[in-house]
Image 1 (cartoon, one colour):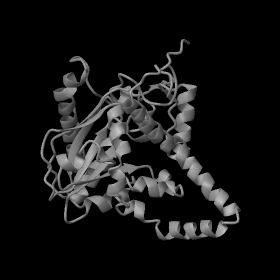
Image 2 (cartoon, one colour; image 1 turned 120 degrees about the vertical axis):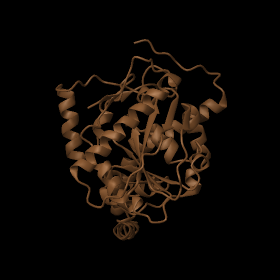
Image 3 (cartoon, helix red, strand yellow; image 1 turned 45 degrees about the vertical axis):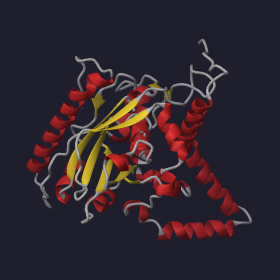
Image 4 (cartoon, helix red, strand yellow; image 1 turned 90 degrees about the vertical axis):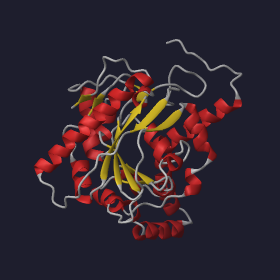
Length: 335
């Protein structure tokens, strides 16, 4: 394989952008493990009392990830996130106003490998969420696994990440004052195993839990499609039924976390590595779907709203695909 090295005369702003993305990838691939190791080593050292005190804090604070988290506007506004945004770059596109007196459930598609568009738009202020949607507070739902990691859990909650448990989404959507937006990557971890350039397959036909949540709490549904999300990484071939896919699916069921074997570019060369490609991400927030609160929705209620949601998602994609480089003959595939 021929290696394409990065030129030496790269402008400082591009180096800062790369550094910001290195920090982000490092956070989810390495930092969590480092935090867990640090906690264990602290418990085995002469400073073991600090580990005991922190363990006590973890117990007392155990419900915070399912009770709206603990966001920090300061962390969400760090300059590093502006560099992170500009690396791709990431943009947030508004197609309709969202009334801040209501609560919303935003269905984010596709999941991608590391949900870069979801993180950049809803866990930071780099793309101007608060300016585009004044009065709304976004919460990106993330697998509960990550909130069990000492120290790391406190860091990710600062950005507005909360657990994806049903109780967590219910807490956000049941706030009587309104102005809350729960963001769910509907395809979940399994969809990330198919995230590769050109992929337009969404695992959504059997995913109706978010529809039931919206009905129970009267939260209006909003489809969101992130154009470019699947273009950031290549992935090892893992067709359904292959040995690799079976192993990945087994580990996903066992750990609750998908393990896509992805690759893209490196820091000093463009031929291989774990950094995403510099491909633009345009996250388009669709029109809200009115939902009438139904405390005990029937199967028919859920199915009807699910069908309407899929139609609105398809319409959102079809109306915007050619603006963002997708040819007219390509369409979403729901499985």
